[in-house]
Length: 164
Image (cartoon, rainbow, N blue to C red):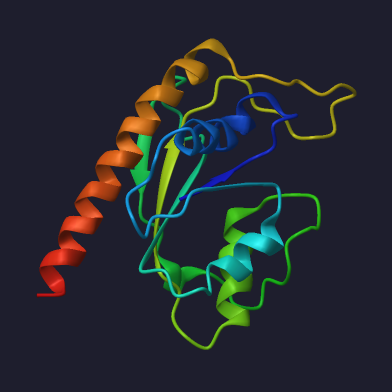
């Protein structure tokens, strides 16, 4: 599970907040939790470590009420493999997935995105940072922890059945 986002851009810090909450708990054996923040290059390389499934947690605008959670399974075949490297100090999940495809010989793991509809969306060129989540997004952190744990439980059960 990878929390991604920028804690200095208001609700974009959702992924790191969920990762921090999950890190205070004990994950099941074989499950790794990390806060990647804006370290896209690190995440691209980690995607090549042989995981079966990767859960990315991020703010994800879809025009729904702020704080709404969704689970998205992107079509990894649709990513342009020639997109290039992500910026060193920015997190562009699409670019990270495209870069990981370029870097590795093996197929990428299954990717699921747990997204939260933000209330406050910043571009990064504002004159001041905005640390902290809006109220609806802050309330969604606990719900996201429960959702991630439920997804992990389901994925581990499927994996166990498949290994028999």
